[in-house]
Image (tube, rainbow, N blue to C red; front, side, top):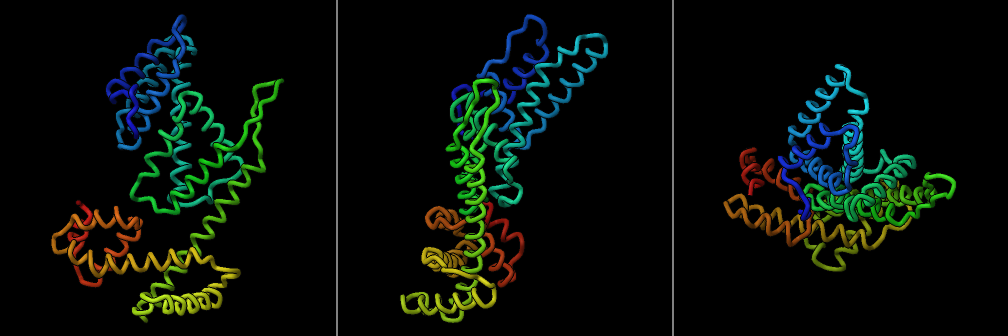
Length: 316
């Protein structure tokens, strides 16, 4: 996560949590927005790092409060603890939904869930401007494990939710959203995933054709031949209908060229010990790590290299 000037260390955050929970009761002050933000950021860092100490503290605090209530303390003693755990759960659920969208696609998203995410976005933003992005989006988009289509899905969703207008009635505090606009986000996500499936098929066939005629990739005429053969195969074998965007063909050609460069020129040098070339290629080519690692798996399998070699390649 991006460092915030009011960010607490794990120890400071846990101490703040204990103070807020154990000092709760009659006469205690309410939670400040700064305190909530600090605890949410600390919780997110703990989740990202797999740090179980935060969970352990929550368990112990809950147990301690339950014992006090069992011994006669008022139920209100646990009010702030319950409120904070609700906040943490909201963070975890929203993070989980965005991660699933990024890496697995939009199959779980429906109208109700997107409305819930819109409410979450507004709630986090009410605590601190930009908090939703800092907690849920920024680190996700930087992940090397996330491919370009995953990034596009996340950006499409977040930008779409941000543009949806909130309508608040004068009679009550309920908020209403333009459900047609929410449905539009779902439709655009579905179209993006349709494009992704088409591109994966397209790239696979282009790669096969380029292996059959390697020289064809180097000339416009050769690429046009591959384009025609690929189009025929997509229609006859895969039932693809409608026009295939030229931009997708160009993207497929570029992908196949980069894969060939990595497999034939870069990777052999990496295996021989020039490990820095790998990261340099990843940064300059913009090729998704997913493709890089798939090429490495194929190369090591073809050349009967051990799994230790793969670990060495990827450890730098």
